[in-house]
Image 1 (cartoon, helix red, strand yellow):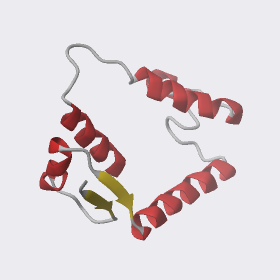
Image 2 (image 1 turned 180 degrees about the vertical axis):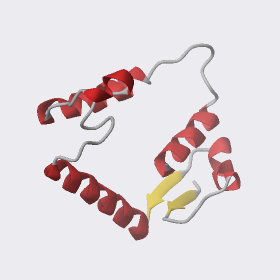
Image 3 (image 1 turned 90 degrees about the vertical axis):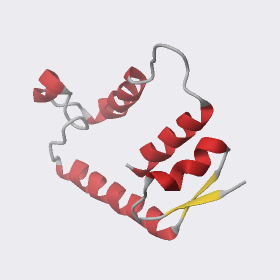
Image 4 (image 1 turned 90 degrees about the horizontal axis):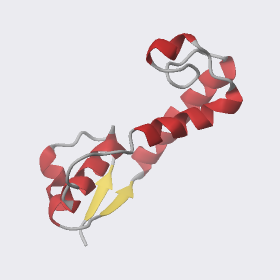
Length: 107
């Protein structure tokens, strides 16, 4: 099984071609883990300060004028994921799904 190291570098479509063909192993390197930790710290620092963050501490769209309580924020994010977890038509091929998941991981 081929391994795709996830780093903080930029990627091109050709980097994902192996995932279209076969399952691949994905490994996060130290730079990627550090980037995740840094982003998480920034988010948590803003939450502790009470910073208004669209879609995190507020609703979405016309509901963005409403603040979301700390107790309800986890549920808001869960609802957001669930609201996008629907599809219509024929299922995508497995390789396309793997590639889409990799792209989502990197964005």
